[in-house]
Image (cartoon, rainbow, N blue to C red; front, side):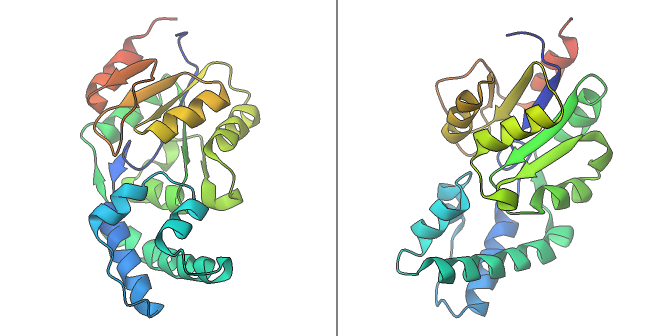
Length: 212
């Protein structure tokens, strides 16, 4: 793998674990919508990284699209209200690592999360100045490989790599034509990767020590 000029990260399971905050927002939204349903951490863990339409059809097969979108909008309003206070659990070495890596690479985040969630993450973590750009599935409802290529083209990236934690990340990275780096501590796994690391500290050291 060539030395990259940029690093594009997944969010959930790669940079942090915010499942508890997501869970609170899903259950609060369910109450507002009178769904008579309680979601569990396992429920949300199962769908982490999925695109919105797949998540909604999985949880609400009996609803029409309009109903699903209404519920999702309510849940995300709860999530964005809770996020500044609750945040999530940043994996060890992530904040320090991103600050260090930004000295050598352009950094980006592409996630299948709702609109504004990456922005709220960056504010919560005080990392806004270190990440060049971001793209969330909720902005345009396009698949991850499309949004990866969107940032590649927007910033004229020559040798980017994508860093994630699931099979879906790997498959979308391949569709975008990029090398894939697996971080094994997240929400999933895959056997197809160009590099893998068991922690963010080792990941940071590897890429900081790469020579031109």
